[in-house]
Length: 83
Picture 1 (spheres, rainbow, N blue to C red):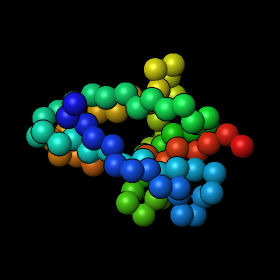
Picture 2: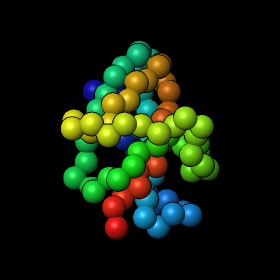
Picture 3: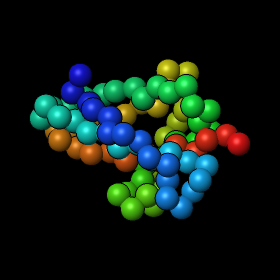
Picture 4: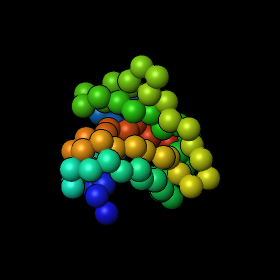
């Protein structure tokens, strides 16, 4: 796989959320699906300071969250969990 997941910590300012960082490691474009057993209520792109990006909300599909990578791109996602 060309997309790698970094260890997800809890979000610093949002105890009901987890931050997930993924990156494309082979210098190519790639599409990937992020699947989890966590009860995700909302998924959104965020910056490195965990601030949601404008228009960063990602649709939750049956297969998970679909992501697109350009070469060496790092994506940060904020996964808000159901309480």
